[in-house]
Image (cartoon, rainbow, N blue to C red; front, side, top):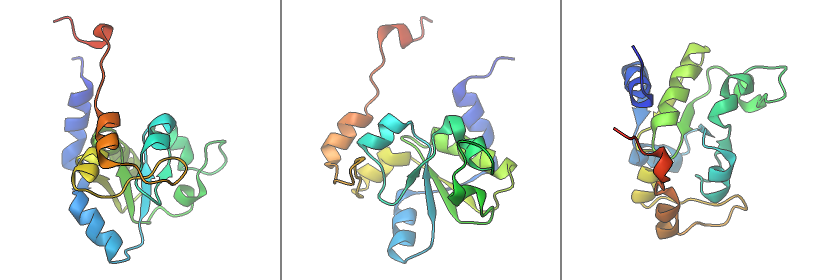
Length: 155
């Protein structure tokens, strides 16, 4: 049976923990030590991301979590018990990434439900690749999907 992207995301959801933007905001305000891992593509991260998050694109996540790879990210490789919140634009890639991290032995991983869209809708700050604030309306515009005709299902 052929599975779609949505099928894969839905299959992993019962096996991961998620938190909403307001929960993450509360934890950050209360000073909880968190490793915010944004699995968006580098071009997305350069346009908008949560301050203090690190960019580990979904495509290199597994190698980033282990030592001795060009992609190794020490913050991930050194502590499988760190409190990690995985982030992406919508919450789908981050759900898959959270599931992957759990499979790799990470014990305290959550995915940001609704992703950066929800974070922005909740009026929380975003910055660009230079650390400059991103206007909420501009972020909303950048996060809007723009499918080309050839990307739309013919059925």
